[in-house]
Image (cartoon, rainbow, N blue to C red; front, side, top):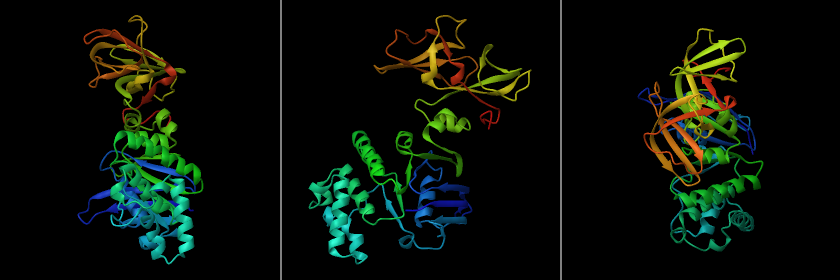
Length: 363
């Protein structure tokens, strides 16, 4: 198992399109790292560069202390699990998992030991004699993971392995991948997904990318609770964090935030002037509450849409001075209807402030 280090890594295609810009990242042995971000942000390209399937245009990539920029994929000590499974349809599950070891001239006894150990780990033992067409999507993906395990690679790479599964199978397979990580604590795993739920539930650390840049690296809770900028704040969490234009003023040790003539004192210290300057106020939908009166509220507006989900209710509120609807996620069911005037409040400790460049204060 190995560390992975990327230093000033770039990817520029022949048409001079720069897909990745100055990527610097240290991945330690035993970490489960998740690359996440919107479509086209470069996360799959970055994974393919680590695997050797894409050339590196600039910078260096080290695996286990060795620069591997010019080393072919087969010699890098990595194993990759694709979203399309890529199984041999004419081979049984056993033979699919054993194939790479047979090519490497491993003894039959060792092949049998390693295949059956991986099959037991992934609950595939009853299916070893079946062809891939006789398996469900989730079972096929487990075979693809098992094929990677038996190679005993330095690094496991997962390229959106759950994207072809339905919702129920995604949940079940996600739990199996989490269990796999627990059973192989020294294994370094790099996982690409566009699904933030996968990122939040699986990752030791998340690498959030946007337009070829790393926006923030940290634990799932760190990105959720302390986003570095508005992009991170809106990408992590569902529903997304509410971002409202505001005026921010510092008076002594107090920070005052004003939205549409409504003001509130926050717990966030800023470098704003006493007169105030433009910025953005952020609050997560689950941290908003309905106030009993206008005086107790901070954000006031008319309800534009109501989603009753049983265990919770989502209120979409049109707040004056805010282009986007403010979403409040409230526990249980409410009698609130479209067109009702509501006053929303929040704990000052839960508020986030961003400057006019959309960067979090204190960074």
